[in-house]
Structures are given as C-alpha cells and as structure tokens.
Image (cartoon, rainbow, N blue to C red):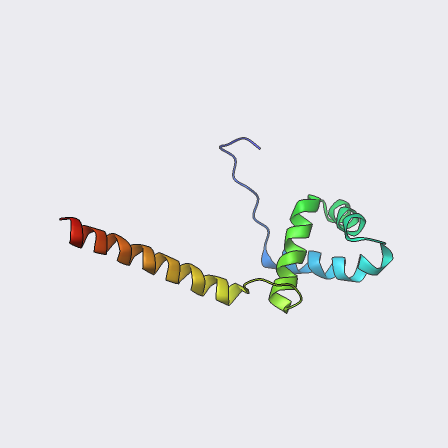
Amino acid sequence: MDKHEKAKQYSLEIKVRTVRIFLQCRPDHPTLCPAVASIGQKRSRMPQTVLKRVRKHGVNAGLRVGARNPERERINSLEHEVQALRSKAYLFYHL
C-alpha cells in the first residue's frame, strides 16, 4: 500500500458477518490458521484482517483478555484528559 492510500474501512455489518462465518466454519479446521486463511479467501479479505476481527470479537465477548470497546473508549478519554492536565501544569509551573 502506498503511503498516500487510505486503508479500506469495512462496515460493521461486514465485520460481524465475517466473524459469524468464521465461528461457523472453525470446527471444520484443525487449527486457527487454516480457518482464518479459508475465511479470508472466501470473503476476499487478508487473513490478518479476519484474525484481528475474530480477536476483537473474543475480547468483546469476554472470551479473551483485554479491554472491551466501552472500556477502551473510556481509557482513551482519560488518557487525553491526563495529557491535557499535564500540559496545563507544565505551563503553570514553567511560565
């Protein structure tokens, strides 16, 4: 991908459908990698994209360790708030 090209954004419906198809087809494959590759070919997606989607689904479903979507959003907003407060404190003490 050229540095000026933007990555393709898939709709939520397509992402959910890809995960659903993966979950249905997963028992047909001995390990995760062939299952991801198979779904990637069927859906015309890169295997890395399918794997990323499946992992996010696992986190949101509570099957994998990690921050769920609402928690991640809250963490991000708190990090931005801390950064803003630190910059204000820096300006206050150094000016």
